[in-house]
Image (cartoon, rainbow, N blue to C red; front, top):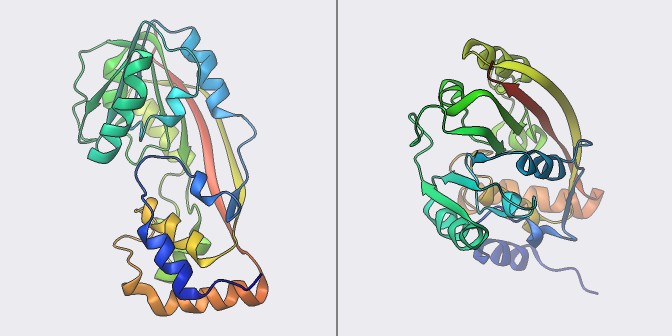
Length: 254
């Protein structure tokens, strides 16, 4: 089979929709090792024992919808309008209400409204708000993106980043902030996970979808670097990076 041209791969990756939080378009084009703790499966276990739960920054609702039966009261928040619409269509039939929320304090819920608050890869974490909407004895259970995640790719486009940028979202800092908000850390686990990008289209799709990796990314703005990376992948094989993830479980004292 004749290899596809740079321009062909670019045009395809630029045109595909990046709404939602489903990465199936990358099947066969990129891989990412999964954390050992199995977040979605563990989320399902916790939802099964909850009476009222909130999923913050739910994206397109895919993770929550796939976690299993939802508790009697289930709410989710999301800020990006295309994801709000997608999550509503997916989660409403399952009994969840999706609330459009700007991801800034305050959360649009009363004090002590939930016995479980969850999130997968929140862009921002407002610990005081999480503590406020949790009932005494309630739990925050989440998988966060860790420090310097996929920075091999970030620094390919942006150059070396200062240490204060590389350290952002460190689990030690997150746990300290959670404790400052009055929560107690019950579990904290971190892993570095191998990623591979097999063609330049996969790189473009990823950067269009995960917009905070290279802020303001456009193909036109980085065409020269993309062309160089395309040549590198063709000559040397997949571009390898490493994502960082940590599992955090924090409880509000009873």
